[in-house]
Length: 121
Image (tube, rainbow, N blue to C red; front, top):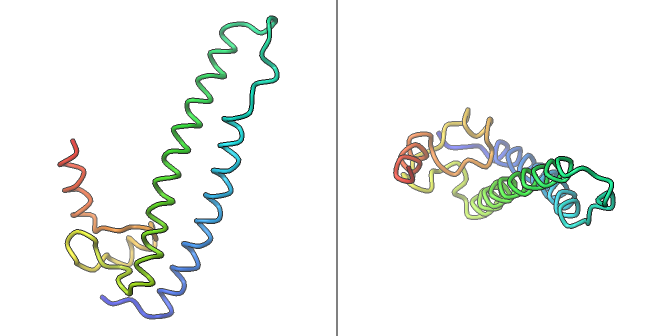
């Protein structure tokens, strides 16, 4: 099924909004990770320091995930410019509209995504 110009414009708007949200979130998380912990000192318990380090590690992991999504959003926006949005990068088959509604930055069909993930495992 070919997407209409109106649908593509709506997906583009959603992608731009998602991109802005993730970019804003990433900026805040990166500042938080970079900021020295002012509360650290001799009076703080080692377990508290361990918890802080764990929280910082979680934040770094989430930041990496968000950066991956941001790259997918950028690729989806690029595909809109190319006129190939909604077409699987692997199989060249149309990506079902329901999938795009759920994940507007989807670059592959579910089948192509599953094959890719099986190869990685």
